[in-house]
Amino acid sequence: MTGRRDVTVLMTGAGAPGASGIVRSLRAAPDRDVRIVGVDMNPDAYGFALVDEHAVVPRGDDPEYVDRMVELAAEVDADVVLPLCTAELQPLAENRERFDATVMVSAPDRLAVANDKAGLYGFLADEGFASAPEFHRTGTREEFLDAVEALGYPDHPVCFKPPVGSGSRGFRVLDERANDLDAFLNEKPDAATTTLDDVLPILDAGEAFPELVVMEYLPGDEYSVDVLATGDDVHTVVPRSRARTRAGISFEGVVERREDLLEEAAGICRALGLEYNVNVQFKENPDGVMKVIEINPRVAGTIIMCVGAGANLPYMAVQHALGETVPEPDVAWGTRMVRYWDEVFTAPDGRTYHVHPDAFERDRTDHLDTTPSP
Image 1 (cartoon, rainbow, N blue to C red):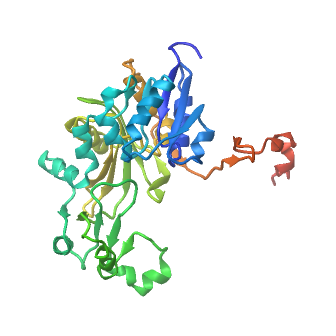
Image 2 (image 1 turned 180 degrees about the vertical axis):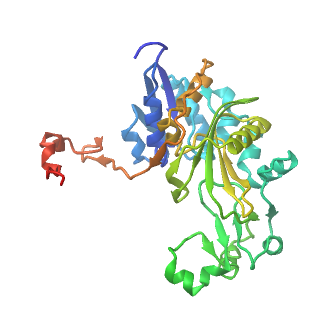
Image 3 (image 1 turned 90 degrees about the vertical axis):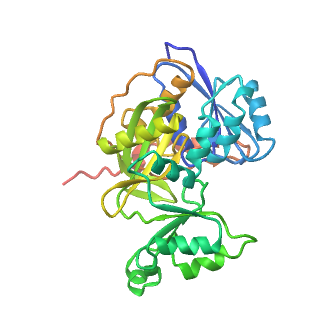
């Protein structure tokens, strides 16, 4: 590598599903070597096999988490801290001044709005964004039942989820067809779909009824829009479809130049004053209008799709954090991604690897079909 000085990135969430793609994105920096120190609360995090150094840290909501991260950042001489997990964002944002490194998170008050779905939906409505969904914040059983009815249940499906969460945790769709025999026999099961009668005993089981956001059902196409935000402006916006997902993670999609999503996501990030990598998720309502599902004010797990299309947004965010000039990417619109599973092995002596070293001693032609094509 030639050009700029090498940089050390302290990356959290080394066991997160998207960690491998983000590591590969940083490794693809064209003008410098990037040293990656990965941390996770799980000592067996698969990402430890992919980074240069690693360490175990407390959970993001643990009182000792920030102290350990400040200490570790100093030990490894980190230039930037790149968080991958939602639970870590607020503690890191509130303690940014304690780090010698640049912590790649937005201001605490901006995060508080973006991470609270009810607060976010209300903000979007107040600011006049067409993507604001219809919703109700509820905190009691009675409020929940009133909101479900107001949004059309049981004649129409209704969604609900916790105000603050990550991925698809706690998300459910209330749909009376969930107990329909024809759907049971002919459609693939969906763990997120249930009925009011089935879910109420679960919600009633706690000491107090949980706080929930009840929102309109959005049955149409889904998009993730990755943004490199700069606080008062945005640098790059890349929409991508979510054609196939598992557990909230994209497994297939296409990078698409959709002007409506480019403008809406940029406007939302500007209005919120967000910075660094931001992910805005949209889903289409029955009238064909894209509505915001949520905002992840952090690097997204499937941002590697943008990298494959020519926009290395994780590394570009590092450049922004370092105060460097960030070049405009040449996005190859129409790039399609299909995700597959990979494996990491741990040897008895603690070494980690993807494929056993002995496998490379074999003649790879033994594994190829050499039959001539007709």
